[in-house]
Length: 403
Image (tube, rainbow, N blue to C red; front, side, top):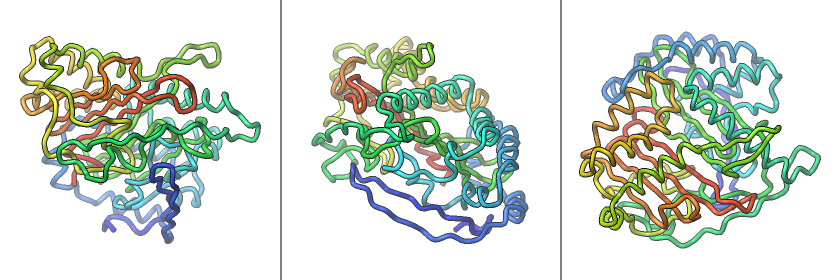
């Protein structure tokens, strides 16, 4: 347990191993928000954060929005939403599965008042760019769309069809358990609840301009772990996914992740025939390799073609791909992080497996650098007959923070 907060309420967490649900409940202790806030205010920024962060974080705006949200809560709700920064449930309370297959940390948005819900969304609006926030809103609307397809009338949805898990060969340096991807992988789940009300928000560490804290927000097909330490910020890991790719909701057309789809396919298809052959990753992937439930290790031997060896035009395509993830973060910090990742192209690889087209449900694309890690995985339909996507963004130097 870290020293900068008093113990806080630990929430029950459910871990999903493929479609098997294992319940694990941890204890809880009393929490004093006032004392914790005072303690965190004096907490020094970790030296590791100062070494590896790119800076430019709009921490003050996020802390202000978080404070406004916390001010709307009762003491009991504050106990439920605030965790110690180092609480291990931070790494297990997010997934591409809906609840209750994997229980989330913190407060369910559907249990909040309209004012509390709006204040929670203001936290995400502050943390994300306009592009990133709009994507989050559209992913939530996609979940409302899925709920409408099989609404039982009692607020829950019928069980979606799960995607079978194929046998896969791990890449170099991967765990040798016969599968690629962690227990959070796969499409769909059992006894699922779809809809934007099934999204959750929590804070690990008291939000502070000087201390270290994480904003964790997510539900089905979205999970954000955005960690701040003074002027530094990391959004690693962040999962964004969607089913279906396109839909109409309230007479408006939506296409979440359209930019990620187009840019990823554009980058990999810019490779020549010889480069494509060299870029093929060993093994096949039916889901994310380092997705929910599997935080590593990262492969020790990168696979694919070296981005630094590509033409300037091809590198621009890779940068456009990177930008669709990095630019989801607030603009100033995103610009600094993007510059850092681009500067590492001489050690960054792009690879693929299964296919390179958007209409192939086996298409898998990966970017692997000293810092940036992106996976784009096409999925067969889980709740619809259409292809959908799972994606993950990580920073190998700052997953869940800088240690």
